[in-house]
Length: 435
Image 1 (cartoon, rainbow, N blue to C red):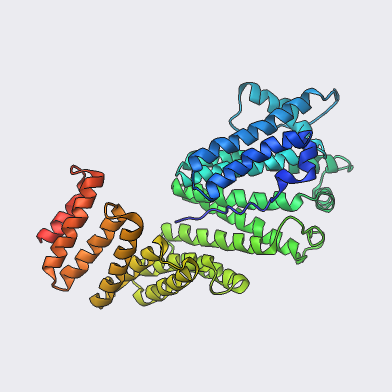
Image 2 (cartoon, rainbow, N blue to C red; image 1 turned 90 degrees about the horizontal axis):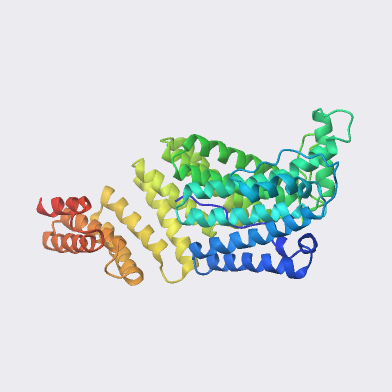
């Protein structure tokens, strides 16, 4: 499964003094902040993404109301801005964009609201992602990037406008001025990387593989540049460094983000039939995580499982088993009592031994998977049925035909009860145990 980055490094945007001032006071800021907190809580603890989405949009609405009020109070008739036509806007909302957001972007006191809106839309997009609403998620990611880049572009235009020309040299000077004077530059850079990664994951799920590849590449470039800048490692003369401004972004977070993007690139490469490139991306992701967080990091387990899937599809069963086994060790270390992730790994190990032998090891692993799934999902569940089906195949291969028939029939009964008797998906089960 593709992963999206959900650690929103713009932490405390909604509680900082800059945001409170931009919102016009503590009460106005608290209104938006409470909506965001509610959405975050619904996502983090309850996984109620359908309820979180309206909360995020309500927080966005609170900021839009502030933007409108602030814009109406402005009287700068000679203001010259830039095109701020946001995607998917119309009617009164469109008027707000065209009349006020360029002013917000140019205001050093107000433009933090654009980062706040970008962060909210990223959260909303992630919630749509979890609900498998890929197209809507993409729309929110596009809007999130629009607000983020609007603020950045406004600063560059203002700075380069002070120069006699607007060549590349002036742009570099403007960029360095922006970094040196903007305490939120780091947040903007990290937001850009998060949006690109999550957009790529959504596009990949929409089978837009070339677009997803481009987004992942861009996300990786952004994050690697940010990490180098954070350490002051940029070798190019005139390139910005963030070492003196590292207050909002953590080194650990950036490394984790880069590893996640490499993991997702591996999944995409595998999906596109490029196993060697997929293995390289997974290996790079593992190397980063192990070096930074150690062998027992949960992210290491996730990538090892993906690597095991890749090896299994390539019929490299020994490599696949080793990857699954290590992933299971880490998983059990963190979850204590075996959970559904552990059950999936037991199932995968069962598949490996069913493919390579011996069947006895396949049976032991699959029975453990079945036990955990019955405990967590109950008897009437498709995951339970899939474990029963695999167990039936193993029993049949071992010559235990009575057990195989019972397992196939139980799996078939579950699928009929859930999917329906007219579904063609039960025919495979019938054919197996009749043969």
